[in-house]
Length: 508
Ligand SMILES: Cc1cc2nc3c(=O)[nH]c(=O)nc-3n(C[C@H](O)[C@H](O)[C@H](O)COP(=O)(O)OP(=O)(O)OC[C@H]3O[C@@H](n4cnc5c(N)ncnc54)[C@H](O)[C@@H]3O)c2cc1C
Image (cartoon, rainbow, N blue to C red; front, side, top):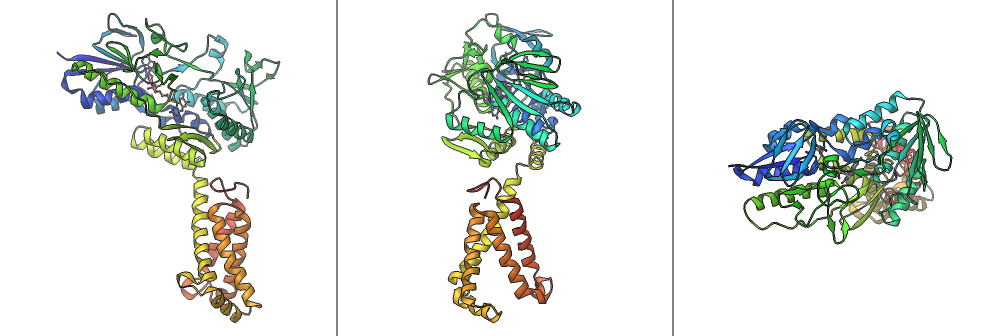
């Protein structure tokens, strides 16, 4: 007879467990997935629905499609209780016995019993929440302040995205993070906290630490210390907790209600937990809540279900930490990837690459990529490509003119040509032009003094167009200035745009 494996929750951990069970479980296991939602949500991009305009629909994927791919039975109901001793899950519609269970129900916003906040404030737990906040922003043009309760990763990400939202629409609103602790992003290293704070300041996000939201009256928020904000939109993200059924379970939990698991991810002999729902201590520290751990834990829990069923010794779960990024809406993110500190657009790009890679469905991946491109993340890359291409071309040209490399004339040959064109003293002009190309090209690539270099190169190319090509008309075919014209346009664009965010300097 087949053994029943019940997975509660079809997020990252639940899907990974179901996939592993399908691939390695064989015919002896029947997998049932319970999820209260018919659509899964891709949480890491929820804040981007607000700022970068990613349609929330692209962040969902039907469980029915996963059901086909991973061959499980799907029960679209909420789990309300789990009895470990009777090996039974109670849902809104039935009681279901199991031989093995994987709890992968994730976590949700914790309102800490604040009924006012629960009634008035917005949470950001799934794609539906993201579109509700977006709708509220669109429909309430009178909004004067957005108050974000909680200065963790989610709060910081939301704040930056809100600034992006208001700036794009040329609307004014104060954006305020209210944090009870003396500092935001408590567990992060000092350099990251400083980096984030600097960027929040640049995005005109105000941060009130050591402050709590004391009262909410309609759309008026009152903070401790007497600050009052009228026409405020309140977003609540000071912490998370696991769903109620897990909180009620008779087993060890941490204060958030996360289920304490052992090194095999076991809650008891036949029940495992994975993802946000599991509290796993690694070398004495709790593992943070993250997509990568949810996926690997889901797989590891499924492997142990299979091994337990086959009577094999269980495998210890050994976390592999690939790193993390704190994505900031101005693209100056920061993080630590594979043990290396990263900041700036590189960190942003790594984050979004992870997001596109981990999201479900080809059309979602394509849609997210297009939205991100439209949302401006790629503008800096585009500028860098423009600088790189133009800089390399000028630098190579400079090597020809200054040193006679790649079949070039060298300074003396170049000065003879200039003499023929009427430049005097020709040698001085030859040096000036050759080194303008050489140094200007190198600076464009490096992203330093970009505006000045681009202006100098613009003059160089304009002079070349005028003295050598002008009389021959526009088209390059007849020796005209077509090619110089394009390069002059690029140089002019770089004078206007400046270096962008990839390079040595962002100002110069
Ligand atoms: C705004 C935001 C941004 C984030 N950004 C990042 C990031 O950039 N990088 C990163 O690594 N992590 C990020 N995270 C954290 C990451 O999304 C979570 O760690 C991850 O989703 C946990 O996966 P999970 O499978 O445990 O839970 P989830 O993915 O949340 O899935 C839980 C599933 O269980 C279902 N469920 C819940 N309760 C019940 C119930 N009672 N009955 C039936 N079904 C139930 C839910 O419907 C859901 O489908 C972010 C989280 C948020 C909220």
